[in-house]
Amino acid sequence: MAKISIVIPCYNEEDNIGECIRKIPEMNCESEIIVVDDGSTDRTAECARESQRPFLKVIRYEKNLGMGAALRTGLQYATGDIIVLLDADYTSPPSEIPKIIEPILDGKADFVTGTRFIYTMEQNAMKTVHRLGNKIAAFMVSLYVGQHITDSLCGLKAFKRKLLIGKLKENSWPDFELLITAKKNKMRIVELPIHYRARKAGASKMNTFKGFYRMPILLIKSFIGIN
Image (cartoon, rainbow, N blue to C red; front, side, top):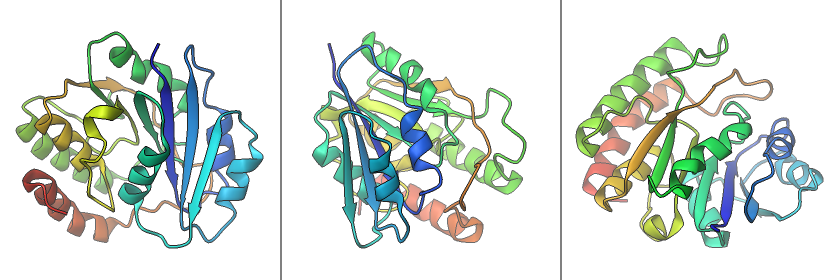
C-alpha cells in the first residue's frame, strides 16, 4: 500500500494551521503530515506542533522564500509515495484529501488537481477579479497540457513523488510549474471538483495587482522551464 505525505507550506497562518491539521482525516494507509513554516513572523510553527497529531513533522526556517521553495523543502523531508499539497488557510477542506488521492491509488492518474469552480463556493470565498485571472491562467495552461483545466491555482493537489522530485524550481507560486512539469513528464492529469470556503481568519497572501503582474511571468517560466 502506498504511503501518503501531506505537505502544508505556510506563512503567518497561526489562526488556521492548527484547525487545518486537526481536520486532516485518518488515512486507510500509512501517512505523515509535513508542515513547512516559510519564515513566519507569528506562532505558526508553535500552533502546528500544538495540534499534537501523530506522524507530524514541522520544519521552520527564518527567511520567507515563497510557497514553491516551501514545497520543495517539504518534498525533501517527505517519505511517502504520494504527495498531497494542502493550503494552510483552511479554505480547501482537508476532508477531501481521500477523494483527491483515490485516482492515483486506483492507478488511473499520476497527478490530481482540484477545481473550485464546479461546486458553489461560499460567499466571499474568491474575489471576482481573482476568479477572472484564474480562468485566464487555466485557459493558457489547458492549451499547453492538451486537456481542459478549469482551475490552475487550486491549493489541493496530489501527485506521485518520484515523478516530480528534483524537477521543480519555482520559489513563488508553484501551481503552474506543477501542472506543466507534470505534462512534460507524461503524467496522467485528472481534475476533480472540491469545495471552497471563505477564509475564516488571518489575511490572504494574494496581492491582486502583484499577482496579475507575476502571473504571465510565471506561466512563461513554467512553459520554457527556467528558474
